[in-house]
Structures are given as structure tokens and as C-alpha cells.
Length: 122
Image (cartoon, rainbow, N blue to C red; front, side):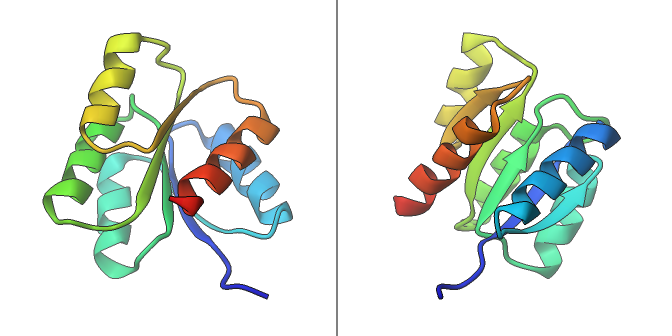
């Protein structure tokens, strides 16, 4: 069996963090959560993650700022923006800043799993 994929999921919505964490753990992933971008950056300073799932609108530090932090430090984690912001300009900004994919909420678990498989294959 291969190495377990480690995900960091940052979202300020507690119920959604719990749901995504439990669904992905049920699929065999190791999932760590953060309630905002600040906490996500603190966690990134301590441990590596294969994939980050980032909400865009979070208090203090938003998802795009976390994405910029990763890229400025050349951290190799892949990034999927998982957000309620359904705005093409925000999606384009995310991709320009290095996001590997962009999924809008409410999300479909199969779409999220396909996205994870796709970005891990890159």
C-alpha cells in the first residue's frame, strides 16, 4: 500500500470542516483542519502536507494569501480551492497564484475525490 495522503483543510465553517474531514478520512486520507488562514500557515510551518484544501473567505488571512505564502516559500503542496466564491475572476486569480483546482460549494464528494486524484497525478 502507498503512503497515506496528508491533507490540510482550512475553512472557517466548523460544520463543513467536520463533514469534509470525516468524509475524506473515510476514504483513507489523513486530514488536519484549520479554522482560518493564520492557523493553516502555522501548521504548514510545522509539517508538510500533500494537498491543501483552502476556503477563500476566512477571517484574518484568506485562502489566496495562504496560497501566495506557499508559492513564495516554494512549498510543494498541491492546492485545491474549495469555496463558496463562484466568481471567475477569483478562480483565475487562484490559478495564477498556483492553485491546482477550484471547486465551488456546495461540493460533490465524487468531484472532490476526482480533483484530489487528478492533482496528485501531476
